[in-house]
Length: 293
Image (cartoon, rainbow, N blue to C red; front, side, top):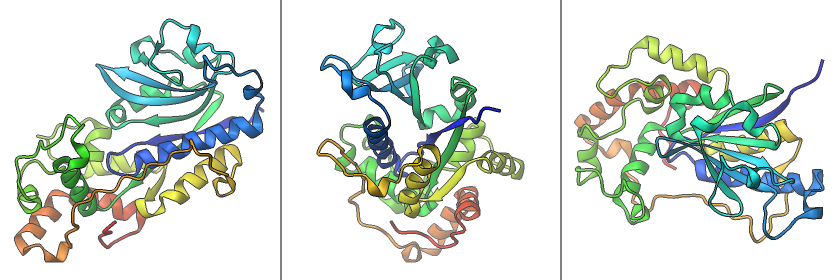
């Protein structure tokens, strides 16, 4: 019986170290290419042997496939749109499992807009490959501050969501309808914001997460290390980083607020609005205190 090889499949939850994880996956892929392949032997300046493929649905990126393409099959395939030497895009409707059979699939990043169709994306993976699925969770209060601070701060000037919140303070944001409510549950189960979250929804999402590796954001380096070690038997702690190995670790510059400093009303409203998020966080990270990171 042939043993299936594993590849990392990372679920990118916004403001949960997703860019940092994605950067490390690309660095690990370059390292893998150097020590495990001869792809660089016949490289050319016009083409790249490592490519990032954006999967597009309705004009939005729903996933990214990291591919090894030493024979430049993607460059010759008209279904793929070339963005840069390393970056291509393809409409999800034009994809099938055959789209990636002639290349080496190193890893997959499922973006937040792809969570609802994750099975459709995973079905594109060759059945000889086993997805090693993992994601990062973050304390609801910490992520709420990060989301609000980012969208209202200078860091998001380039973002179409910049300054979108009507609430002019974080405290007002807590009391508003703008604050996120059970984002992961709603996204994975495709539940509308107007619909209430029930116990059965929580149980259903837990059944999905039970098949993944789930980490607290404070353990993000462990998550990356275990994914690469499990799938490729490579220890990222031994990597010698090159000048082009850029790693972005986003950090919102706004001042952090302690949960205890909020009024009783704000605390009660926040806890009620985010109770399902907090249950998920505590169940999978075993963390029962707010993380101010």
